[in-house]
Image 1 (tube, rainbow, N blue to C red):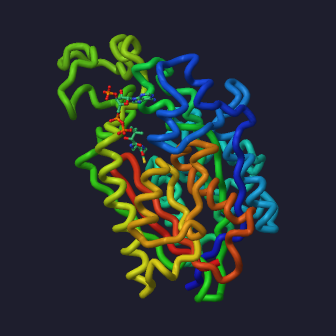
Image 2: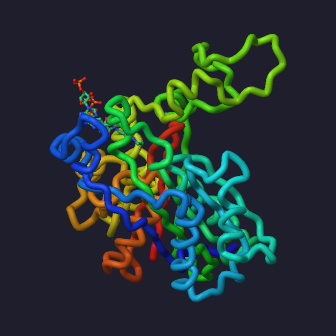
Length: 350
Ligand code: COA
């Protein structure tokens, strides 16, 4: 058995900056409301028809690969987390393999669908593969292009103002130094609340879970209808009960962080840097207070990028590292909560 370590980190955010005031062109909102409730000042939107979830992931991956001191061809497995894939299927794992030009290696590519916790799940998978000696250079990517699938009318403002586009990536490698690397990962889920934050249609549900009328043809008629006219008329956009999500998040973040710390016999005061999923600055502030952490023990960048879901942790982690906030020997804690509900944490000794 080995330990696994993060050998290289990279992130990519699109050039186009969209401020809160820019959003006022499309919906009834205000800079004050968005800043006060979420902490967000601006976000990035990808260049439509030129950039995709995959291409952004590839740009982040190229940086992580270079920093790990390996060649693209050395990547022996890919784990790609996103809720906004280029295609419904196949997933972005194979597309990023192609985008990176490493198809001839025929390395496996796995897609993770765990929304805001996507990177935690993806990292945990990579950790297990590396620890057992199965792979030596696992490329882990979290990437999102939300701007292609949101409701820009006033009706959708509660969700649309929160999310942004971007990507982050890590190379996970084995290390024989058992005191370093990924010390533990903790993953959880509770499907009871699946629809509290969900992109429901299109899908194969046929109204099964909520018995709502989605305009599907008579149940006895064989049909391969996946998207109904009614869905199209109502708009294919996400649904979120924000207040409910908020309440669960502030409960689960501290819980899962403490679970990881207890597992390692550590305390919150041992954390050099907490990099929480960037859901809402108020959620991060609550978690910081609950864990008794100083301002210099937490990294937030939601102000600049909004919530980039599976990309938020690798973007924030890379940025913190680039800013010299992570030094050799530091204990870094990652934690996420989101749709599913799913949540998780990781403790990493750099
Ligand atoms: N601009 C202006 N007003 C807005 C608005 C916007 N963008 N979005 C909502 N509002 C209005 C609502 O219509 C509501 O008006 P009303 O009181 O007249 O009905 C009012 O603001 C309060 O809305 P509410 O949804 O109760 O606000 P909130 O304080 O709960 O904040 C969120 C909303 C979404 C910012 C907050 O609930 C949140 O961040 N939740 C967690 C979401 C999350 O993290 N999701 C990702 C998964 S981790």
